[in-house]
Image (tube, rainbow, N blue to C red):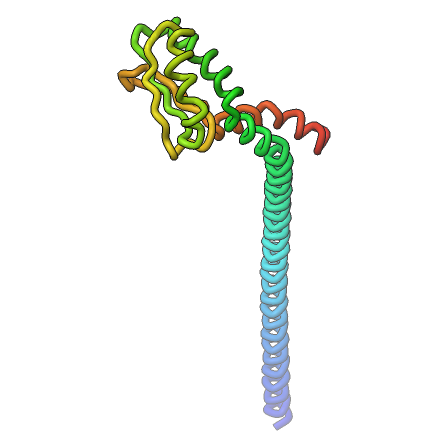
Length: 201
């Protein structure tokens, strides 16, 4: 009877010990698995956070770059507007007055017609402002032909506010010396000085 009790106790104790060991092993395994999951989750969270920070930094850099570019373009555009305004104020009125002046146009037309006469074998076609017909037509018909020694076919157009167009009579090409042309030439001449005066460049 004692032997049976002893055997029973031994089996019970061994089973209890084995169960306890297995239970502890399972608990340890669960702990290890949980620790691994937590570690991987932390790594993923850090990776996601790092990516989010990088994306935010990249986006901020892009925004700053776009703002700088927009600011530079706006500044450049404003400076260009100021430059155009100043040059326009300086040039527009004097040019319009000059290219609407019969005396000024007579001098310019004579100089240009002489060059055409020296270079071209054909007669010259001249288009002048309709508004100056009364004051310029006698000059073209009576004086200019004698000065350059060649025929001048003159017409007057409402499309030209000031200045003139000149070229070979065959119409192969013409040179525009209108108010817009003069304005453009003088404006481009003044722009570097104006820019330096306004912006120190």
